[in-house]
Amino acid sequence: MTQPRFLPLAEAQAPFFVGVDVGGTSIKIGLVDELGRTLGFSRIPTEPELGPEAACERIGNEVRRTIAAAGLTLPYVARVGLGTPGTMDVVSGKLIHPHNLPGWHEFGIRDRLAHHTQLPVSYANDANAAAYGEFWVGSGRDFHSLVLLTLGTGVGCGIIIGDLTIVGENYHGAECGHIIIDYREDARPCPCGLRGHLEGYASATAVVKRTDEALANGRKSSLAGRIARGQELSPLMVAEEAEAGDTLATEIVMETAAFVGIGAASIMHTIDPSGVLLGGAMTFGGEGSELGRRFLARVKEEVSRRALPVPAAKTKIGFASLGGDAGYIGAAGIARVEYRRK
Image 1 (tube, rainbow, N blue to C red):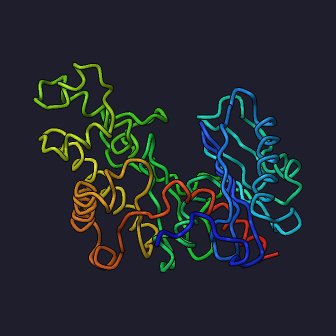
Image 2: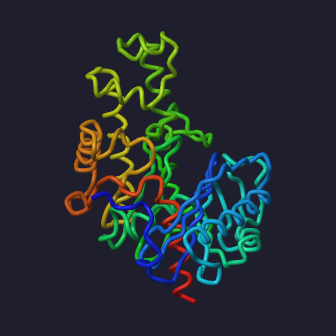
Image 3: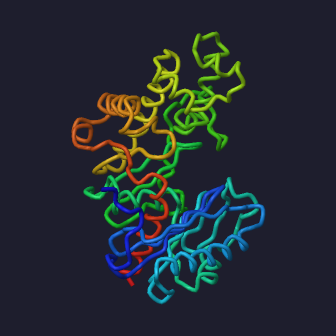
């Protein structure tokens, strides 16, 4: 029998928390209980052009609506957790320079959201929030520490050690998409403007660019026919053709796995985590796909080649399991940690 998406209020355990996951195109809002189970969920468009104050007001309205739809009132909710992209000052609660939210720079989003929700707000980087979600109730729930690499348009990362999310002195901790995997002067450029970073090799943007270059250099591939018919090259197209046996597409996927493995080995030598999880939109089907399983096997193979024997043998490497829910669940979990501390 299929389980319902939302936990009935009668089965939930207080206290309750709201998680807010702000993205460039949409904002996810979830109400969870003490055990990380979802009682209600909503998604609204970000509409960044309207500005961050308008977004905070709309989030506040949607938080109240989501709480009411679950059969609760505001006093039953202990705290809100907020995850946002880009650079930030966690202590002061300010967005600094979020690249995918133009015009939202130097904005005190934590306190403005607290104003509009009438609840205390805990603030975190969105990748750290997603990592905490996996650590709390996802694939990392049996780990003492974990690294989550999110493979999408860029390469995000969150690091959890115990109940601590790694933020860093200048709020740039866990920016593992920018670890150096190629030191050469002509290394691939990263979208940040520097060269040789993991994101410049293993992101969705990089997959498209590397494939384009191979086709321009005369590599034969079924991808060329699809592009000639007017289809836009994407990692999904690469994955589909790899699954169909195309040689170039398969090489691109496996090469991407090798880059991820190189990055993972470097992170393992720094953090020595219980596990490394791979999430995001570009996991090539994940555990439910033969290509996804081959991708993961290639990551593990590269880690085995490059990591010291003990972490290579003991660090668990697998796929994240919460998907797009990880961000709001983890944000709520971070709010829960702060609530319990206070």
